[in-house]
Structure formats: C-alpha cells, structure tokens
Image (cartoon, rainbow, N blue to C red):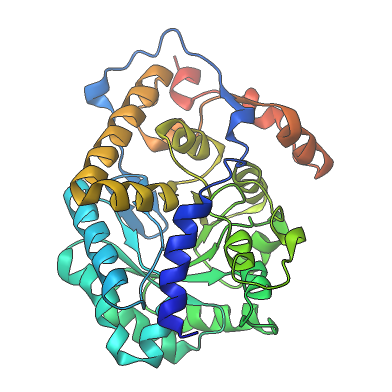
Amino acid sequence: MTRAQRKIDHVQYALSTGQSRAHGFQEVSFVHQSLPDLACDDVSLTTSLGELTLSSPIFINAMTGGGGKETERINEGLALAAKECGLAMAVGSQMAALRDSEEARSYEIVRRANPDGIVFANLGSEATVDQAKRAVAMLEANALQIHLNVIQELTMPEGDRDFTGALFRIEQIVRGLEVPVIVKEVGFGMSRETVAQLEGAGVSIIDVGGYGGTNFADIENERRQRVLSYFNEWGIPTAVSIAEAASIRRRAALIASGGMQTALEAAKALALGASAAAFAGSFLKHFMERGTEGLIAEIHLLHEDLTWIMTALGAARVEELQQMPLVISGTMHHWLAERGIETAQYSRRTKKSDMTN
C-alpha cells in the first residue's frame, strides 16, 4: 500500500471509528460562582502559548496531508475555517512531502489559504534537523509539531519498530530551529515523567494528546490481519494527562487534545492547566458532513459557549479560568491519588482578584 493511500484510509477510518469519549472530563466539575461580577462583553479568549499569542484557545490540530487531492481539499477547507475564525492550525505529518515533492501541495495549500494565520508544521520523532527545517520552510510555519505515536506505529502493519534516540533527536531539533517546537502525543496521553524529559530537552510547548478521542490503535487494527486488541484501550485519559503534566511542568505551555468536542470540555481542560484546547476528529466530521461553512458555524458556537461559561465563572481571561476552583472525582481522582498528585490543589484555589477584594 502506498503512503498516500494510507493517508486516505486514516481519514476514512477516523470518521468510521469515531471517538471513544473516554477522555475523563465527566469527572471534572466547576465550583459554581453565584456572583461572577462579569459581563460577556468583557471576556477575552486570547491566550499565550509559549512564545505565541493566539486569538482563541481553540485550534485545529494535525489531521492529514500527503494523500493527494483529497487531503489537499480537506486541508484547504480547514485552513479557510481557521482564517475566518482566527484559529491556529496544524497539518498532518509532512514526511510524505519530504519524500515525494508531488505531495507538498497538499500541505502548502494551508499557507496559501491562510497567508497571515498561525500554522504549525508536523513531523514524527524520527525526523532530522534538516527535515525539520524543510518542513517549517514548506509552510512558513510559526512552530513545528513533533508527534509521538509509538502505539500507532506498533499496531500499524508497516510501522516502525525502533524508537531509540527519539529524545536526543527532539533536543537537536529544538536547538536547530528558530521557531518553537511542540511535542504531541497522538491519542495515548503523556505521563508526568515524559513531560519532565521533554522540558529537560528544551521543549517549550507540550500537547498531551490524551486517550479518549480518535483511537489510532483501533484504526491501525482495522488494517491488520491479526488484531492487537490490547492496544485499543491503551493510554492515559486526556483530563488525567493534563493534570499529570501540570503537576510537573515548570516552563512549558500545555495543549489539551484527545476527544475535545465541546466548549465545556475546553473550559475544563484550560482550568486543569492547559493554555489551549485542540480539536481534530470532531472538526473533521463537521467539515466532511457540512463543508467549510458548517465548520465555521460550529467554531462560532464554540466561541460563544466558551464566552458564556467563562462569564458564569467570573473569568474574564484564560489566565483567570486557570485559577478557578474545580472538583475531581471518580476514577480520575483515584488515578491522581495513586500517582501522588494532590487534587485538593484544584478544589481549594481562589481567583487572585477575589483574594484582593
């Protein structure tokens, strides 16, 4: 099977398998604020993501590219929605274009469609510094995503089987690029130990890519003769992974991804410690069913809902939302307790402006 055909298969399988909704956000609850002292018009969705400033904490995460005209069509539609709504956008792995220049246009269309937007290039952890520079140049990218997908590769019939030296290569890329490097999981979550290693390598933005969204083990198992079923439920739920990462990170900004579909989930992710919430599978579904205009309408609703939620909580800025008290229950509470992460730090905190009143 060609790499291009595999890219198309991934899109089709992602749509057919859907999202497990096992991300853990149902076990996170905000503490209601009866006196928010805030108007909707005073809420700003602007957020800082490392060195970058985003007009919205919601962005379009890496999905596709390298599959010929169909992936070019998808990326163009997503890029037009990103332009209209002021969202950052990442492309799928560009290794296909580095190996076959004919596939470059399926990625370059993103920058052509959104010349002034924030665009993230994307490569796997096997990439060299030279490949990273070429991927960034291809899109005039504002940052580079390096994706970690060990479980996907192991499940993929033709996938990699050697993952040695990945952290060293990431560190070399961080040192060799002039744009920020984002390291992201592809749906299996990050532990606090991994986050500490990445910070030690100089990574400034980390996307936890938790379990609960598009399941690439499930997708690759659809392509196998002998199914590796034990990988289908493998990983750290998104909400848990954010809390793990937030408990250990010192400087890196966090991105929440993995099953994000609603503004409430995005708000909870931000309150747990993320600076941005990335949507992929749900946006792809909206685009494929309703086109670019339908996706734009959905993003406008997400922004409206997030503004209302922040107003209800009395959080005028994302930084204030990150201070709001919330209660963690159930399996997530048990997991974090077993890992030595104190959940009371969330339930007992107070917005700084309230402490000064």
